[in-house]
Length: 99
Image 1 (cartoon, rainbow, N blue to C red):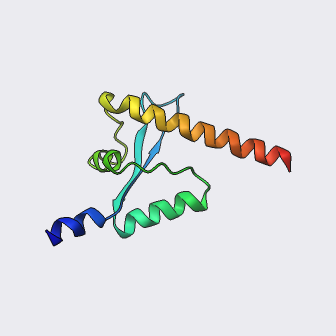
Image 2 (cartoon, rainbow, N blue to C red):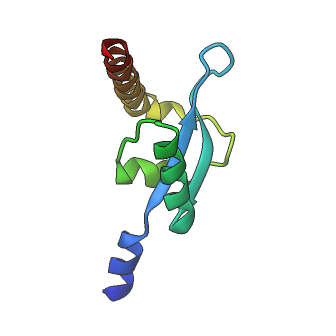
């Protein structure tokens, strides 16, 4: 049981990139577990990139290769994340304009 609990504590992070002018679907641009996951998250925070936490999705996406586009069965959930990111960007822009 301890082994299972230890595995559950290992953090997984996946970064997605999407360029609607070039890509047919979002693709994995970084992926890692443990210390590498922490670095991916740290880089996102340092660059003010919104972070969405979904352990199951991160585990699924971590099985893809870097540069691989997400499969069609994940389009809906990833689209929801992109809407979240867009909303965060709009909030940041409004805050900047108020200053």
